[in-house]
Length: 562
Image (cartoon, rainbow, N blue to C red; front, side):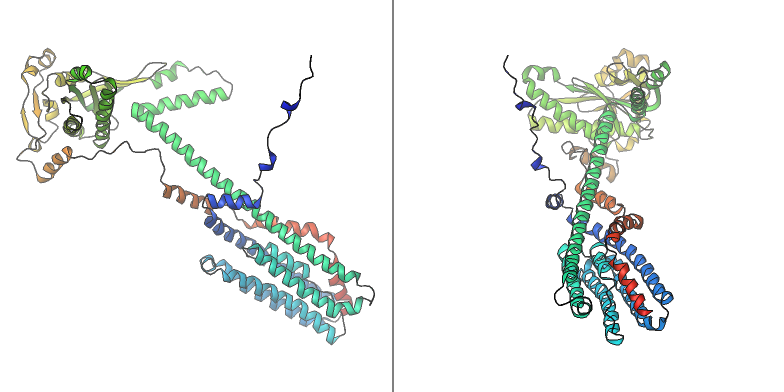
């Protein structure tokens, strides 16, 4: 047996394409999704949060530093000038940087953020170097600086400079100023002509801290952009899920009314929940009875419509053209039913029937049903002209009560039953094409002066079902009554010219709605001070033990004062 090759066992995934944590990839992704402007606004809020933490931190550090200078020195009058310089610089920093909290002003004028960062940084640099220069000439002390590393941390971690090159330029400039100070005032005291090792270490120290600051900036941008894209993905998935649920709801309600559909949905959700918990998925008899409950609707109007000459069309038209014609016709009827708030039950071939006042009780159920019937006649006349076919509508409307409910187990079917349903069906079958055949109970719910009403058909007088229930019938024409008001006349004219658009895209959320929801969610992204403090001060605490020269600088300052 030949040795089996292990080539197929090697993972074929190309990890070189995994770029999710590369800043260049995140920049391109934000640009593709048109999120750069929103990201810039969020970044401004985030840096302002960092800035609030820094102002508090700097205030505490200044107070502690000045207190240490005053109480640890035997001759505090010597360090009065140091304390004054640090207090003044702290006041300048707090005042200048506070301008950035006016977000609208800072966003309109980006130069404000850069200027405030430069001014506040050099205010502290000037105070730090001036006190060393002052003591050098006044007391012949070669003092090391106190805030050199602190200012570099301040620039890269707290200053609201959105562009990394701006932060790098400012950090390098501050390092050059400090290195120059070391060379002029400190090197002569501590360095011999042959040994400049410590000076080289100081230069290397500033280079490393600038690199560390840039690393923090890059990683911060990567993390924030990643979280920003994750939030965008979360919002979009939430919108897609909401639209999917809306589609499901619309489809279900187009078949079953909401008052029937909700118990069924609740039952399905309960079964799924039981399955997740590992319980039996079978429903109890009580739940079945609740879901399949029969509802009685006492005040509704039922409309039955039938296409005249449908049998002839099935023999003269091919199947495809017949289906297209029915789709166009029933699509118009569905849109008109939605406009008149009439619930379509179903259609059987050329029979279309629906009920008004079923979804919610309405005093205008008869008026809506008759209006829908007149609209259906107008639409079928348009279809007849457009498709050049000899068809018409025969419509019957009756007002009364119905029993409605869902039957079936594997396949649910919503339907209506009752004597009044049978009467409406017979009104349709005994009606006249191009007219709405109504009963007396329906006519009593209408305003007769708004319609053209003529007596019912002879077939209705001879119909055994209608005669058995003493149903008087009338025909309503699509022509408005000469006594109708101007508003009613315009209403009837609009029936024959009603612009029923193609099936609307009910499942699509408009772009401006999505964008507004995205902006709202982005504004809710957290920028709390506690999180900012842990993010920014954490690296400072981590690296502080490795840079004890700050503490040594303070101690040397105090020893010289003593």
